[in-house]
Length: 380
Ligand SMILES: *Cc1c(COP(=O)(O)O)cnc(C)c1O
Image (cartoon, rainbow, N blue to C red; front, side, top):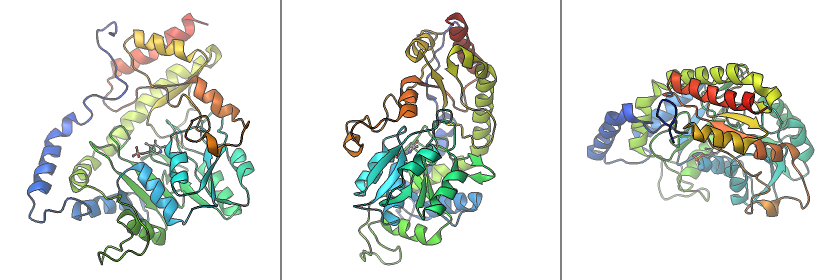
């Protein structure tokens, strides 16, 4: 489909790493022909971990094989297992439930805040019971969860706090980076995330050096890194690739600039679209604090019509997530029969995400906002 100007606007950038193709090939050559023939968990991975640790002021940062795996490693390092419960949002991505289940524990779904679409602290508190071991709020779309309240809640009930910051790298709330509000946080490096790369990877970040030591062991079959073939704990294979570490070190310099461009696009969308609430299209809360700029998500009463209208005008959109987590066949057995999560259900019915990536051009961004605006005002 084509726009008036004759192009389409894809949801994710097609030329994501176009400018860095040379660096990628160089990284393959360097690691591939290096004397050490070290392809995983080598010096470049360690360098990337130190670079992120120092930028954040964390006690440690541990690279691993994905954002999902990072959550699994954190839950395992905390000793969460059979008989335990973890409070998670009822709306969000599958790993919020599946990683808990994979540890042998049970996810307890709590409703979300209707405006931020993140876990509602009051609903989370209501979900805490005798078996609860941890809270696992997640940042979603362009919003960070209410981490100060989750921190207080975790402290009050002596629970662990796992921060699913997989999509929020670069966000801050009250001066503290996404990832460092929890006992541990995670980042995903899958290509579309804010520090994405052409492959799979992730990072655990934490202010707790002992927790990090456990995560380091668990990512490599429970070995301690000094002695191979001594397995202190039942671990995982969740190692990190040296080619990707080299590429990420190359890309780190440009991260701030790419984040700033995302924030600029997001602010433009908000300026244009926030006034549409009375027309049944609700933009995310405005303001810079506690924002992370992964995708820009509207709530629209006539979501499917809006989606079709955007498609007719050459604009790709995404609906994540069309169902709540407890409505997924895989996770329904964990949910109490007959229970409802009204805000999560409403979000699942109404959410639509607009493209948001650094190399969207101004004219594309304007075209997207114009098209949403025209739909809202033409179809009151
Ligand atoms: C992307 C994402 C994950 C999973 O990360 P992968 O690297 O794809 O495994 C987990 N949680 C959230 C909130 C995410 O956005």
